[in-house]
Image 1 (cartoon, rainbow, N blue to C red):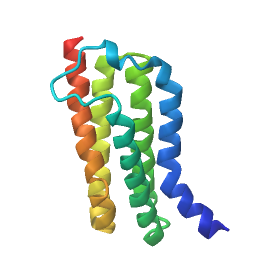
Image 2: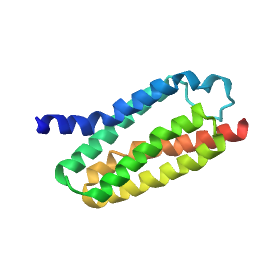
Image 3: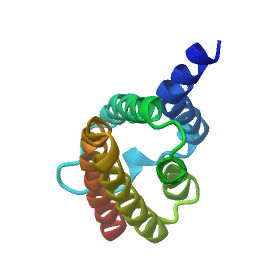
Image 4: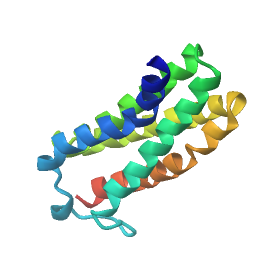
Length: 151
């Protein structure tokens, strides 16, 4: 039973927790009433992008854990960056701490880069599966800074 549940846990935890946070903050999202920087995608794009990214994130960790089930350091960095990721939405949309959300997303950027670095030397495919995630949060960093400046 563990051989079935554990892979499903690694694969789908990001999607499940990301969806829960998205549902919890949905009433606080002021996306349509704030000034947004150039290149801001339509609102509908975000849940689609995050669903794909969360699936790739879960897949990358699943593949890593399959080969390295006892690597505590990478597991800590993985769950830490995921926690920082989930908390960013609350900081930005619920609490509306726009300046602090810039600092928080910069922390996320660094943690994801570090995670990819660690993955690269253990399981390259896990690193590559997070490339879209890194690009997306760098873009989100641009949007966060732009929204702060424009509002």
